[in-house]
Image 1 (spheres, rainbow, N blue to C red):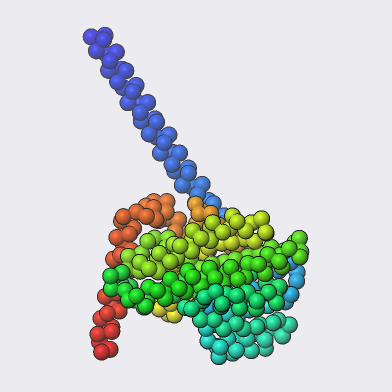
Image 2: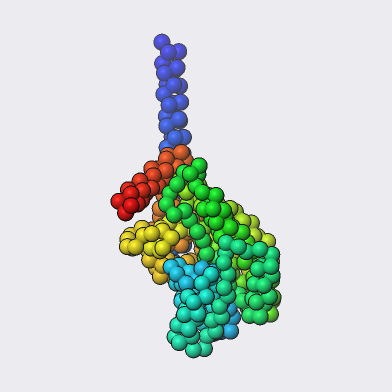
Length: 345
């Protein structure tokens, strides 16, 4: 009887100990999540400073001495990058494929910012070869550039299975998103490096537009998703290489923003307009925003950041369920687009 009672007591104590261990483990996990949420809040609403974060790349109080180069600058997010940089005392090299639009934008900016300089460079990013790269490098070296915004990009016309994607479309996406971005960046880095070397208080900046299409691998946008994933890893790797030259390199992740590319016209809680989005980028320069676990990466807009954080922490960006949801989302967009197209025909 005593032995039986002793066994029961022992068994009971083991159960209590097991419960306590599980409770401690659960408490530790909750604390970890709360700590990460606190970091998210801190990054988004406390640490950011629009003016201070931009000034470091313009020698703090210098106006219209240094240059930024913005690709895809005539529409959407690229246009907003251009306008906000100009408003903060940067000259801006305007790079896009349509000369008429570039001339009009340069004239408009010059009228608003008389002290500024807004030279144009016409480049079709579908066909950037070694000769074009050399020409751009020779052009840029005439200007003290400290900032490069790799904004130009291309997605699919509508979500489409890879097997049905035309070779022209997937080649264009790779040419513009990857090859052109690398060629332009390689052309501009020597000038940024030289400019930054002239002033110990100055730093350089390379921002590249990423996408949630790469954060969550996106069925029916496979080539676009892959191209942005390439840029993610390329940018993160390059950041480490360029820090010794005082050049910061960051990939900027965004969900949908109202633009021609997204085909979304109306802003909402989860979909900002370009002005709101670019303000969030410049406010959170060198902060992670929602990309807490990613080196040299920022998800700057607050609702995008919360979305990124929630998926990463509770499911995982590469989770099968997340992938399935993403597939269903893009499939519905494809079906609506095809239905609309059939009515038009």
